[in-house]
Length: 437
Ligand code: FAM
Image (tube, rainbow, N blue to C red):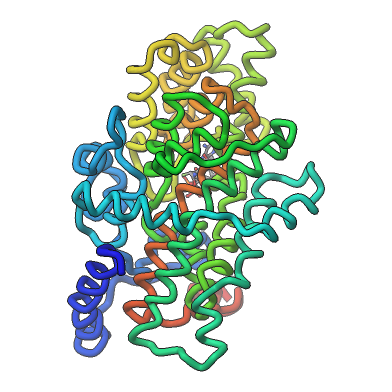
């Protein structure tokens, strides 16, 4: 029995009475009203989800279990010789809310290793798919294929469902899935883009280290992986990938069904695909200039051309944030401190976009947030380290996003969150309510 699971059990036992009390004694307390604009406009700002895994303040950005990004990086045990923490320790922190010791972290490292073997049938499924399938389609399919191994689904089928203990099956499924995601992602990468050559994991490495190895990319790509997975892990539970995962899990679907669905949402251009679009936009633009870094005037014109053609500026704007995304800043800091990267023309252009785009978007007057989000910066780092197949970038996002989504649905089960079922109304009902009929 792992320490993480035992700590989690204690946390869940302590937490449950809070949720029960809120429903039983304070269930009628209002959290606000819902306007017509919110009903039509994607439920923006409607407070109807509960999660303690992370909280997104519009001005401050994300806090994971109460910690800002710099605080998170500072608090967690670091991989020896690395500036960045173990992803496994971060998983412990998101699950339990506690910063693990090095010993507790290494226990998770070992646990993930034991669970990391990708079943042969998953490899067969991937290999049977057309090679030009989008890597996100492959990734989501691989996750869905593993549903046959769900412990939750098996026990449910066998009549062993118990509301109080079913989180344990979710936890087991979530951990089994989490441990396999990075190897599956690396397999897809090497199959699709590297002549179908594959590199075995090294039992001495952590998850980030092994991911870099299996991708075939040298250090400091292991640190890039650790940083990237942690930064992309969670952003409250209302974003498309987290909310979809939660919604599907609320029907008592298992972790595989739920996260495969979450990945399908992440694959959309307004969500996870934006990072590939940023790089596409930036490089097309540089190519037009013959590979030169543009002047600010040229850049401003290109941004306006994009807006005037009805397209969005990828990597800018956010549904909740109203300032520069700290996940953007954290990756920018990595670029600035990394020799070679800080003078890299593509990074210079991304930095120049940061200077020019907010002003353009403000003048354009539509986007509520003219500042960059996480996606405006991540592609350039991947490109610099030779991961130039930008169709693949959302898969990287998907490996990281699993940490938050899977921690969330484990807690959903533990606290017995209900099946999700918001109420719809008709357009005529809205017109009636507005008195315009
Ligand atoms: N460029 C041009 N127009 C933009 C814009 C941008 N970057 N961001 C928002 N707008 C427009 C938006 O299309 C909308 O126009 P209409 O009224 O004509 O429909 C208007 O500004 C108001 O939108 P908003 O309230 O500011 O944003 P939303 O909450 O509706 O949407 C985003 C949020 C992220 C989908 C939107 O800002 C966007 O499309 N950004 C570009 C794509 C992107 O970077 N996505 C990644 C988001 C990231 F956080 C992630 O999930 N990975």
